[in-house]
Image (cartoon, rainbow, N blue to C red):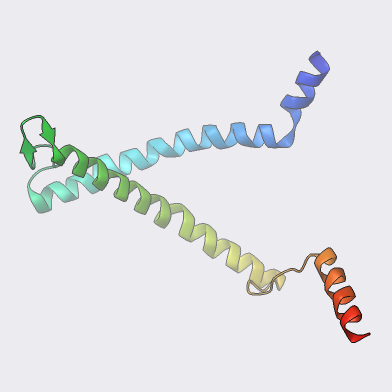
Length: 125
């Protein structure tokens, strides 16, 4: 019973997942600090308020709270895209160019290639 648990824990994908969760939590703090301390104050300078919570209030319906959450989401998504995704794509493209790997080439599954050859051979009979 303990051997099975040890095997499960020591699998590479479980360890990778644990590392990803920890790194995601740490990076979440960085992105939150960027949005709350840099981007939202810039919005406050442009619009005069750091959030839209009091914008479009109809009784208990607060559309501004939704707008604030939406703006925060878009800012976080933009921060992740420009700080993580774009640099990673650039690094991968540079590595692939250095290794001579072309991105537009599709690798064909050998089984599909074999089946295609068999089909073509049968057609030519």
